[in-house]
Image (cartoon, rainbow, N blue to C red; front, side, top):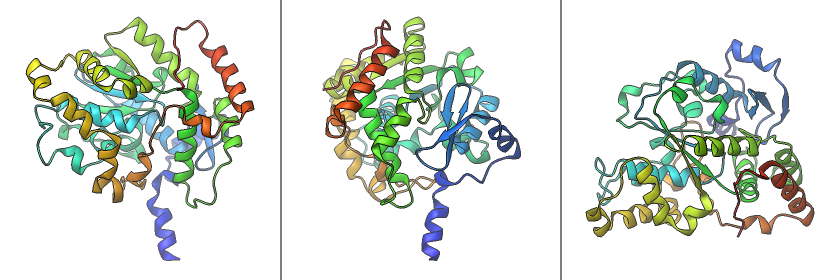
Length: 334
């Protein structure tokens, strides 16, 4: 019994009682809906967010001071975040941590530790982050919609890298992830119930389409600040996309690096097979209680076909056409 209680206590991401009075007061007046994990999800500044992360997001908005050299990775959940965090860390730190060194940080630490979430690890649970331990450029991550970013991020030369994945596979990955994070795996969310919530926009940092479109528009209007990447394009042509990312960050690979196999080695080290097999990602846990292994589910393009009914496909196709028509943004499903 004690082991069971301790197990639940370790899972901070399931707890909703460690909230400030200010946050509790705010929650009492915000619109709320059914959460995928936990009790409720709340609508704040146009996006849906769980209570713990709402508190972290507000603290981040109020306190975070961006630097011009900062690099922030932005995603909706389950868009390939873990993979791109590893690629980004290896790319940016390839001088400080040569990719061929035997004790590279990616071999001993989970990518979420090396590139922490602002509203989760850094400002969550009332934390006051100590940025003095960070090297420059600071690598950070967030699921926050563009409209909710701290003002200092918008006013600085901070670079934003946005990773987008097609909504059908994103939903399936989110559904699996949510069920894996619940206390009892037999107590799983119905795919049809969660699908209806997703279509209504009730998903973490959702609505999905608002999140994606806001960053898509910003990438067109301000391409030097916002770089928009598609998960499917990285899967198909990883070398080309990694080199594009390096150029955006004004740190292109030299001819010598390419000839020495640096690009290929980064892709190999950050591959699904390599990362998943590491001891830290097989048996380790994050400070908030999530097991590292839950972040490594093979994200095949078109996996949604194994789960969607014809009705589900038709419904989401209609929403996608309605939301993205005329934007120039196209999704790849196979």
